[in-house]
Image 1 (tube, rainbow, N blue to C red):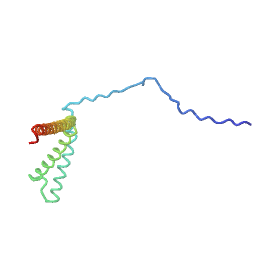
Image 2: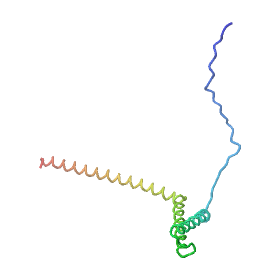
Image 3: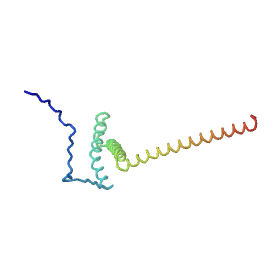
Image 4: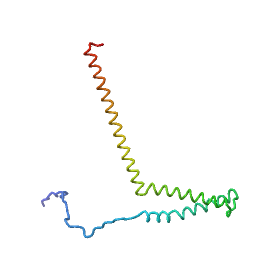
Length: 144
């Protein structure tokens, strides 16, 4: 019986498909300030009410402030306003306008850095040129 050597499998096989995908999708989101304002109101009203109520309850337990008094109302309004203000600042920070503002601030910072470095380079070059002219004039006048 004669043994034949096993051949190594061909690993350079490449399979390509030249067909177009059957379906494609394109998602386009259009929103307005009105939509975002309604979304912000829906998002923060319950949270602010909850924090305001919790703050009044804590005031009742800790300082024995009557819930239905001017101080209880004041505590509720302070907690509600602080919560709403914090949520509003976060919304501004992460809204499309906030992201564009941060991006433009970063780009302006890069431009300002570039201009500052160019001015520093130009001032160094002018100082070096002035020093070379002074040394050259001193040599021409005989070292005075």
